Length: 215
Image (cartoon, rainbow, N blue to C red; front, side, top):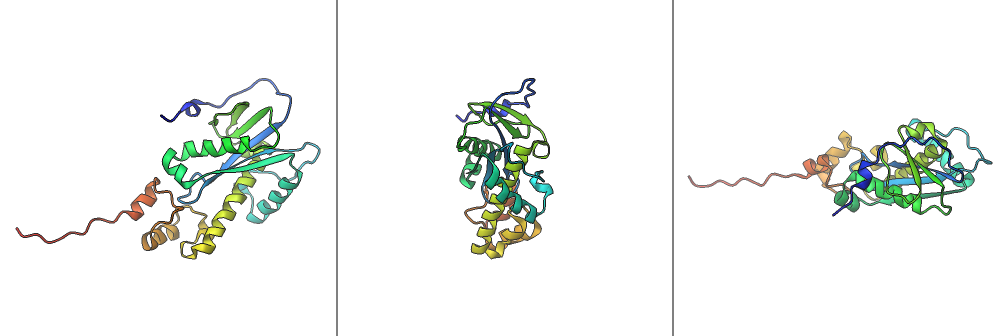
């Protein structure tokens, strides 16, 4: 039976500073109807500050791309991971998001002494961790993680657009816009669509044809 232990994790308020490396963690893609959920973990280098770090949603696409390159060049280490559409449909989006975050932390070349996670939930980790609401706007390392996750996922959806331009993935990035819902109704679902999401299920539902019967 699937463990729900991380569901009980509330935001932790720690009253001491932990010596050692600090990693920020964030995700991108919880709300869309298609594509994986992507998480990133970043350990910044205090000796190489990066100006302009902020919540990725508050930045222009061009600014995110430039910061993405700078983070990759200057961070001590970073890791990007995913949970697939199949995992999202099997586990649900919250469990899949926690899985992607855990994979991102495990993928770090250097092990942090403490992990700061955006939001109010914590994935199961073997290091000290703290959940910070609006952390992507408050903590530079979480901001950096949000940018890596967002840019990575947007690039994946743009690649998907090249394969299936009729869906408009380059514009809506998988979110349930009117254009996306219309494409679902006309063209059906792709393997990258999250069938466990109600809008996808509704768009794909076709009532059984009615036949005339003798009274």
